[in-house]
Length: 166
Image 1 (cartoon, rainbow, N blue to C red):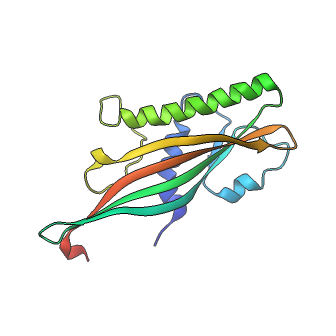
Image 2 (cartoon, rainbow, N blue to C red):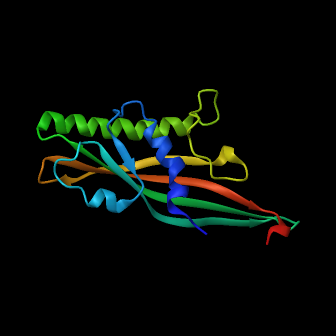
């Protein structure tokens, strides 16, 4: 059975390894924890949620083994209290740099500099697994002056099933 928290935990750990995060910033898995934010909470609260999963390609070899290529989509929501234009610009820079860091970590996935927290979901050919970030945008400003941002994440990987597995 699918367990959302167990599934998203490795992604959460990877995103929390971003060096520019401060110790008080947290990342929740439960979207409701993000949407129920009340004024007075510290800045830096974020959430990750599943936005969809697509079976991109299905292949079968001559032994009837099957390879399923999957692309999972996530929304990464982040709240940072700013309040002034210069701080808002800093928050936008933070967001762009975060996206660049995620994509850089993906680019060096197969090198000796690999981040050990980079999630691995494939049970087959991990070198083709990718995590990418794009579509960063400011969602709005809350009544208490916090900026809310969104980043779209895509994780592509393969699952291998031997013919006797099904």
